[in-house]
Length: 280
Picture: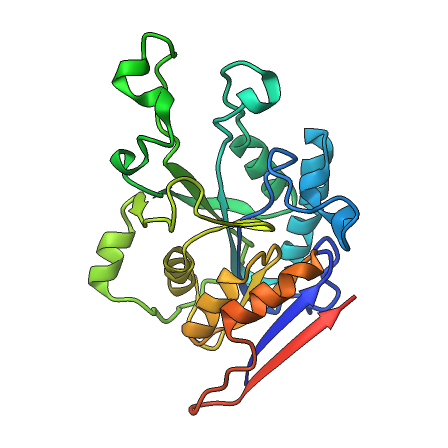
C-alpha cells in the first residue's frame, strides 16, 4: 500500500519514522537566517531553523536533521540536497559580498555519517530572462558596479549511506534519459526568475527537478522523505511517480498549502493509498 504522511513537527526528531525504512531523502533546507520563513510569534516559529542567527549554531542544529536522515535511510539510501551560496550578502554586510555556504552544508552532512557521491548544477533560468532583476549585471551599469555573474544556478548534492553489500537495482529511466541527465548541468526553468516560485514559508523548487531525482535514485513503491516539506513539492512528485512519501513541516500554517498542492486524499484505481496527518 502506498502511503503519504504529513507530520507537523520538528525533523530534528523523526520518531515517527522507523530506522532503515526510507530509500531517498530529498529536500531544500532553510538558508540560515538570510531568508527567514516564519512570522514572529506564530505557531512553530521557535523551531524554525532559519531564525538561528549564528552560523555555527545553525549548522549544528541542521546536523541533527542529517543525523536523523542517516538513521532512517536504508543502507545504500541517498540524501539529495538542493543548496546554494548567498550572492546578495550586501543585505547583511552593507557592501558587495557573496556568502559561501556550500562547504558548511556538505561538512554538516558528512559529519552525520553520509558521504558525497555526486553533484549537479541546476540552472534555474537563462540570464537574458532576468536582466531586469539583476540590474548590476547590465553592461551600461558596469562603470558604477563591480562586474558580477548572475546568480542563476544552484547545487544539487547527492550523499549516500554506506552499504557494505553490492546490490543490483532496477532502473526507472531509459538509456536516452540517462544520457541527458548524466550531464553535470541541468536546465530546468523555475516558475519565476531567481529562486523559484516564492510562498511565505519557503522557496519552491520545480516539481520536474524533484521527479528527476526520485527516478534516478528510487523505483516505484519505495519511500521518499522530505525533512523540510515546505509547500509539498516533494510529496507531489512522489505521488505522481508512484512512490510513498513522508514529509516534515514545522509551520502549521503551511498545511492547507501542502494539502492543496498534493491533492490530499486522492486515490488510485491500481492500488490502495493511505493519507495521514500527524500533529505534534
